[in-house]
Length: 95
Image (tube, rainbow, N blue to C red; front, side, top):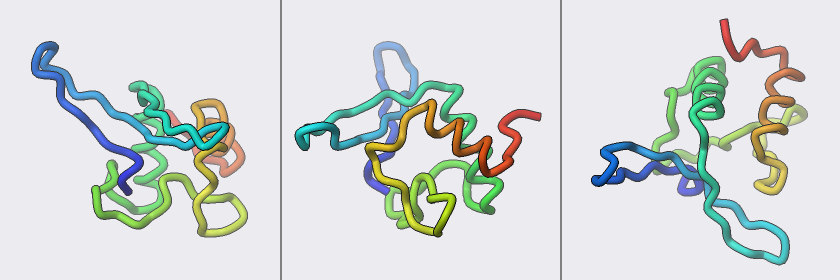
C-alpha cells in the first residue's frame, strides 16, 4: 500500500497523511488526507477486521469495491465518494 502514507513535519511537529493518485492525463498528484477522512478510514478498516492504518507492505485495497473484493480505481476515490461508499455499505461512520 504505497499510495497511502504519512510524513512528519519537524517544524510544526505534526504528522500528515497523504494519498497518491494518478489523475487526468496520467498526471501524478499527492492529495492530503484530512482528519475526518482518516477517522472514517480507520472505522472502515476496523469493520473489515484490519488494523486501523495500512502497513507500507500491505496488499489489501485501500477501499474495496461494493461488488467485489477488488480495489476501486484511484480516480474514484475522493472524500465524497468514500463517504457515499460507507453509506451504501451501511456502515455507521460515527457512533
